[in-house]
Amino acid sequence: MKHFIIVTNRIKDPEFAVTRRIASYLESSRCSCSVYAGETSKNQWKEILGEGNKTADGILVLGGDGTLLGVAADTVDSGIPVLGINLGTLGYLAEVERGNLEPALEKLVSGSYDVEKRMMLSGQVRRSGRILTDTCALNDITITRNGRLQMLYFQIYVNGWLLKEYHADGIILATPTGSTGYNMSAGGPIVEPGAELILLTPVCAHTLQTRSVVLRAEDEIAVRIRERLGREEQPMEVCFDGGQNVALKPGDEVRIAKSQKSISIIKLGEANFLDVLHRKMSE
Image (cartoon, rainbow, N blue to C red):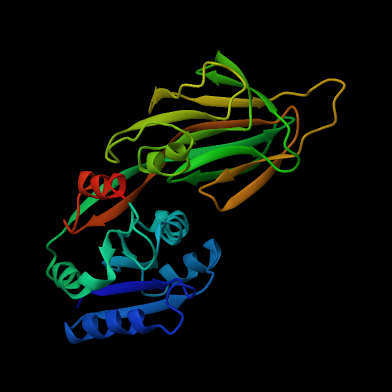
């Protein structure tokens, strides 16, 4: 018997109508399922996935791309593939639409789907030689200000070599999966999500050279926060996939590289990346 985990965004499905619809279909197809809703921490997921759910065939995430990003990051160690069911606006990760639910579930139950591996980024925050944070991100790692509208000062090193010193509102380090997120809004390139590379895109840089830089997946990046002598310290933070935030100080260093972990995304062929991109660009 196949077993699936259902994770519901309670804001997007407050009455659990879609959740019950999916659970009912799976049970009528001789599958079992476990349903979870609300905020679930990484430690709670470790317990959940160790209680008979470790052999689940898939994790079905009901919500949008943001919901899927959070669940994917917390369950990546399980190796269980993830399927996004979109209950919001058109997304890139959550491919199944509410109106096409049953045909999609039929493919899922019958095993008529592919699994795509997506690269992730690892990110470390270092202060005075200590590691404050060591985590990963599927979409992006961003450094932005957290206060008044003042410029940030930082240096970008690639494989130990200084690439550029930026005066900007922030910097985005994105995966191909995350290229259609904040990176795209900041003017960065759109990349096919199955590729393996790292995108570096400044946010409102105070320079005429504001182009994104495309780096190899094997490159290691260090962002060093500079102190502005004679000026009041500007609060800033690093954010991982729009969720976990860590405050930064002058002298801190954020190290980014390709993670050894990767996410498995279930693809049912409902719409390929170029089809979704075409629809988005036609809006």
